Amino acid sequence: MAEVTYQDATCIYPGAERPAVDALQLAINDGEFVVMVGPSGCGKTTALRMLAGLEEIDDGSIRIDGKDMVGVPSRDRDIAMVFQNYALYPSKTVGENMGFALKMQGVAKDERARRVREAAKLLDLEALLDRKPRNLSGGQRQRVAMGRAIVREPKVFCMDEPLSNLDAQLRVSTRTQIAELQRRLRVTTVYVTHDQVEAMTMGERVAVMRAGQLQQFASPTELYDRPANVFVAGFIGSPAMNRFDATADRDGIHIGDAAIRPPDAQLSAAQGHSKLVAGIRPEHLSVGDGPLTVEVALVEDLGSDSYIYGHLAGDEESSVIVRSGREHPRPGEVIKAGIDTAHLHLFDEATGLRVGD
Image (cartoon, rainbow, N blue to C red; front, side):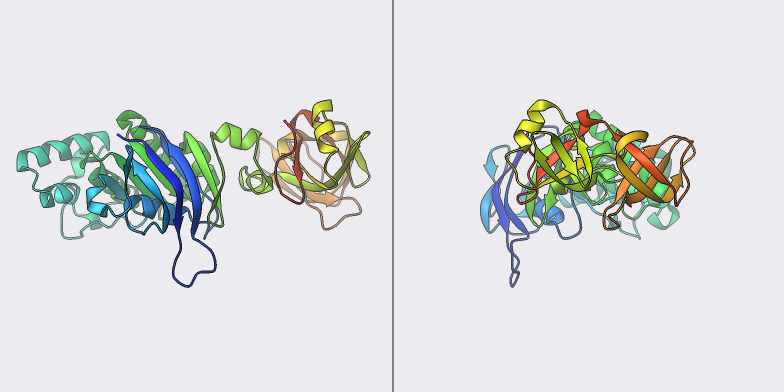
């Protein structure tokens, strides 16, 4: 196991207008499960490949257990990779695939067999050790890829979107298995995904990336409750947080014709900003008496509850999502929406940064 530290780590691809990863600062604890998440092209996979030694570090450094990895070949970093495409040898059995890297390292046959058996038991693959990859399901192949990494007993696991090729139901069950396995092994793990639900359910801490830069590094709860900026607020959460143009004065926060009175400390901090973005999650809006007037465009009925989609009255460019119960309005109706001001988020429009609290 090992601590992993990115210190102003930068990667610039030839001919690129900006760094793929720009001065990344990240400290990952020994045995921690960290997820890097963000939209396509944000630099998360490049950051992982820099750690694994598959991309050069142009500036700064990456340290594993305090040792600078700049210039250290990938094979000498004691890291095991799990890829999106499994990368199994079709002509080898499950057991041979899992033990192949150990064979190349010169590990004795008995020791290889022991490690393969132990990993197979962890991953419920004991009955499949003699099968070829073509006779396995997608989920079983991914577990074999995991087993191949586990038998190496590395300091760090690097996982690059390992569930992307699985169907939705299998992704849910497999991500639970991976998180459970990591908790048992306590090997430092860096996991990359574009799926924010996957990130929130698996990671002890989550690093949100955008355009090569780290936006926030925190626990899933903190990301959800206290997003550091407008991007994190909109990216984390499904459905996304409602965001409205707003202004502030001594009477409250003004969204269109609506006036909202947040806690005094938050209002005081907001008055120093000429233009704001007010954020409120769908579950903190309610149908009934309230300051917002919403024209309903669509209702998603999910059985246990529903989501109401619409826009503010008189502002067709705006977007509003309200989480409701089983009783809900119909498309075309106009409703009033109340706001739980204890869960109001405010951001400076110019910088995008969180305001107050």
